[in-house]
Amino acid sequence: MKKIYLLLCLIITAGCSQAQSPVGKTTIPPYHILTTDSVYVTPANLNKHKSVMVIYFAPDCSHCQHLMYDMKSELPKLKDVQIVMITFVLQLKAIQVFQRDFDLAKYHNITIGTEGYTYFVQKYYNVHNTPYIAIYDKNGKLSQTFEKVPKIPDLMTALKKV
Image (tube, rainbow, N blue to C red):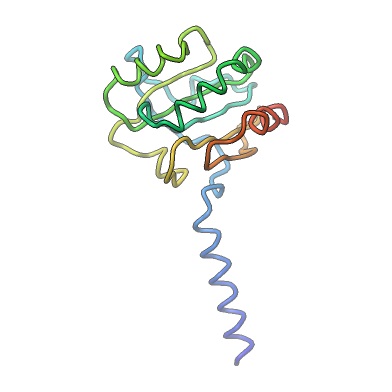
């Protein structure tokens, strides 16, 4: 009887540890965001043969701003990666200022927008801090996540693998 109880406890513990993992989601979330151009986009707008990097961010987050500042010199190397930047902030003006400050409009592979009050993507990844980064391969399968600001060489290495 003790062995059965122990086995049951192990199964429950293993199940709970998996339930907490944001990596449990292995495909691109079915987001619906309003871009800075006032157009709604979904994963259907993505090229099915290119890798994707989803960045969940906040325009006023200093960590997000530092990430973009550090990543700016690498952006030309990422032209074959579709970058989808999603925020919960509703004010399009704040998102447009962020886009302008980092000159993101000139990169046609970057889509930036808000998911609004839905918080769907935030819940999907179980985001507690921004920025949160998820990298998907060309088949749309999750390759790697970063729950904290990564070092740019680490991020670039992860993107080269997909």
